[in-house]
Length: 112
Length: 114
Image (cartoon, rainbow over all chains, first blue to last red; front, side, top):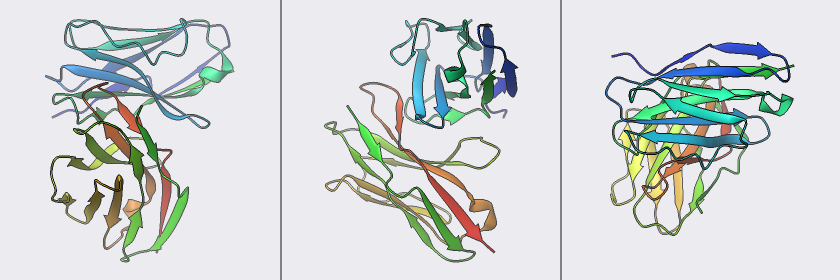
């Protein structure tokens, strides 16, 4: 079956603009995660959705970051007023069993 | 809080040889899971192998096997008969149901030489 998909693959934006990153999880997976991968910080957890429960937002670095998951499937990560330090690869993962996560190809974000 | 340490930033191995990648972790949890993920230049994070902490038997997936030493909190990955396609960054990761997220090590860059 299809894996996790993410779009766009690459995004270049200007400082101060808003961006939206999309994630389509594997069909039937109830859990969805966003991680950020940057050179200086490695892989960091951002946010976690499980079914209809309130998301775990404990990893979001600032209030400029938000995410939603519609209908228990597709998720959008929004970064408002982007800064240069937001440049990174944003990875989405989904799982049916909580502990095994399958990743998408990521979105590389470059803020100029 | 959980921590995962991969102290070797990079390694190199000759094709067809065996290589071992090291990982140590720290946790106060008794029930958890450990993973090795591979990230080739395409940046797709690929699951290599998984180990449940309650299982004493080391996990094996074809050419990949782990040496899980729970008391020492060590979780190394052995790659046998290395292939050029094994060239990638490898991440060790830890999961516990207490916080439902993966905690990753810094990763190690593995190069397989022809």
